Amino acid sequence: MINAMNTQQPRRCAWEQIETVLFDLDGTLLDLHFDNQFWLDYLPRSYAAARSLSVGEAKTQLLAQYDALRGTLDWYCVDYWTQTLELDIIGLKQQLAHLIAPHPGVGELLTTLGQLGKRRVLVTNAHPHSLELKMRHTQLGDHFEQMVSAHDLKLAKETAEFWHELARIEPFNPQTTVLVDDNLDVLEQAAAHGLRWLIAVRQPDSQRPPVPPPQFPSVHGVGELLAELAGGT
Image 1: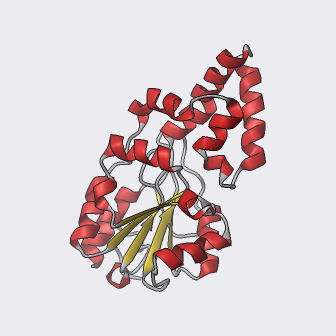
Image 2: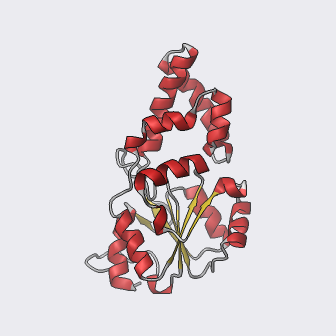
């Protein structure tokens, strides 16, 4: 492996071979602090107020529901939680939208990839309502040639079927495509589908400690990839 510019760390992929970059959204391009605050603090408080529960009781009930659906499409579905909890989920998210923020270097990274002629594809489990809210607050949408929500395919990224469907509407070459994601289950499914290049994000939430290094090549944050692009394309 060739060393990246100004660092002793090996490059995570051979950027000169890459034609398409698949990016996750939450935790990868955007700070997961917003989502963690919403689902683990703000929503339990709102649910407690609506149901005359203590915040502790509300959080216990919600965490049990989250755990039962983790990794499924409903887990990410604004419509599902709106109906199930009888709360305006997207309206509540808008009240906390000031916390929506890209990780450092994201805009520059996406711009640089575009200048290098790489196809930039957003591949996210985020519900279209959440995606629209986040694009509106970050202005990142114009950086992508394609944006795919798992809800459009009716399959979560954690499933093998998702990757077959994605390849049908976005016919990428697994040998010249890199996926950048903070979800290890998703990375494992992409690997099983044959993607050669995979990069994990170790600190999806800036307010929480990094996760231990995964079994995949990894970065603390996607901004680190800028140095590799400068030295390896």
